[in-house]
Image (cartoon, rainbow, N blue to C red; front, side):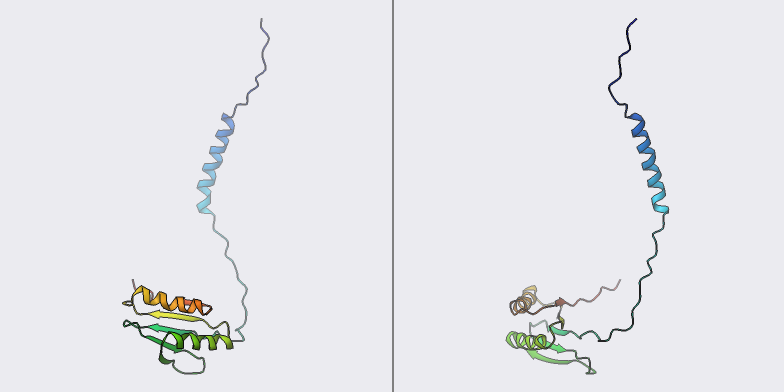
Length: 139
């Protein structure tokens, strides 16, 4: 009669079965768990209203208009400007308040190059907080 040898290998089949069962359980129960609702804290009104943006309007014929939306004025004052005047006015406005935003509104028929030239001019002049204005599409 021969002596029994010790088995020196691990049988992983039961572990794989357990893992597959756990995987199925988590896949079935995950969609049923509702995420918790977060109750965010509230604060009072801001002591300072947000700054009205300076709006650079680029028309279809590539002419520039500057619309200054000041909080005190009922409307917005528009005036035609060239690139140098635009940079000078925006620098002066950001010297008073460095956080004033600048929005570029271009006609949809304006060439991409005209918008890039204005953006490049503002970037070279270190004008901060420049954004593009878009109109949401109606569905």
